[in-house]
Image (cartoon, rainbow, N blue to C red; front, side):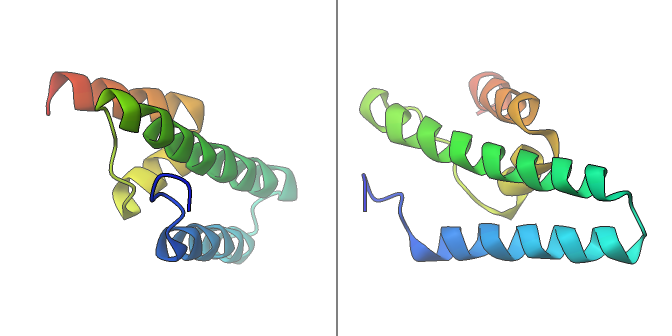
Length: 92
């Protein structure tokens, strides 16, 4: 567990979220290209949140990984992570 961010529950939540996103996408008959794009954004967003917290731990800047931040990072990808950083800087 690198820096305490390798929590199994977080990984399980991301896997469940990605699977749920796939199922909901198929339910609404979304084009497969859009489904894979959302899954890709989810993986990249989760990895970026983890990396941000791993690096930010050393400078005192972390963003909690919870269902709300995971959804924002997953649906919006890099812009979502940037939005979370700006939100943390200006609001919290």
